[in-house]
Length: 422
Image (cartoon, rainbow, N blue to C red; front, side, top):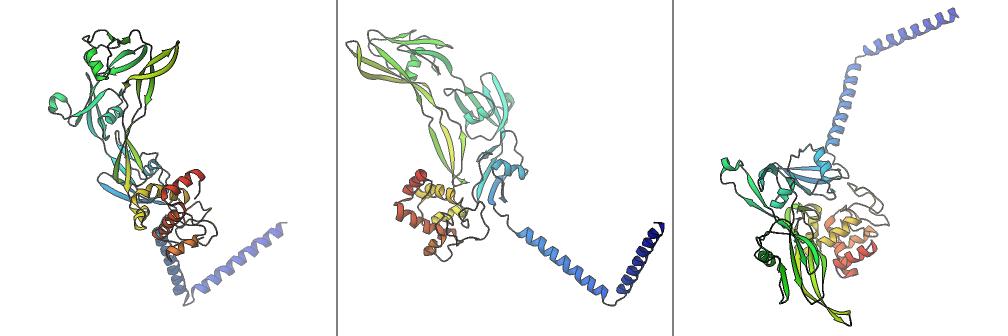
């Protein structure tokens, strides 16, 4: 066993000495240095080319997003699903009171998607004897007060006042003043409800709530009685059967068009809330049975708060091609809804693909293809030879298809909503 091990070691040593002598002979060859240098340069060139090509290559399946903040715009490709995820990736810091439009949970689902960040400014919120100093970028006094943590009732009046005495007010920015309403108990012909008012007397309350008294109506307490917290006020009528019904008032919505946001996106600038009203009816009786009903009056007991919504109108990027394709502005919403659901605004997407190819890879499929998923996609060649890649050409064909088959984009949209296809 010892002899075999010794023989094996000698064999390994001899082999190693032979390889060393061979390498020394090769290294003395006059062409070895130039050849090795040439091969190294080729390798470095290939590596550099690959690096540059990778850096210049667009991010696949990404949307172009324009982020505006701190007086500049940043345009980036992004595969992040939401606005908040993108801002986190970009390391954009949001401070107390900053406002993001659209909201941080809004999905990024189109090219030239726009995100606006409004930086907060110092604000003093005055609520009676209480003063709160905060930072806010909200655009309405009510939104600023809510952002500062105040609970507001719909009848509370919130206004903006300038700071006139910096030393006395202790503020250098906007002042938001809350004028609180007073809660009272109002009984209308037997139906009790809680409402709030800025009236000073019961008579002022009757005028503020537009309560009209008939000949036989009585008000308790007297109209000259001052309004105090939780004061019970009764409006009664003797000798007549009355019935009051409490109804909800839908939240009113005010829509503002904003060209700094992408078309199809929206944001809430002021949260709204529904109101409440009490309608009093006088019943007509016959043989003890109600045979008729007449509305006497309707009193708003809880005022609704208007919800302010901003809608994007910016048509830069692929959605701007709707105008170039001859589609009317009144149809943009219908086109946007259908195309968003058919292809996600990807002109190179074939039916069954879950990503947006950078270049066409399945344009001759027998299934749907393109923005509106023409089946087959080659149908769109009637609108232009570049049908496989040009979104304007595709939209021209889509426009003709919608008009010829459905008569209008609205009808096409209605069909899509009912059948989930078109």
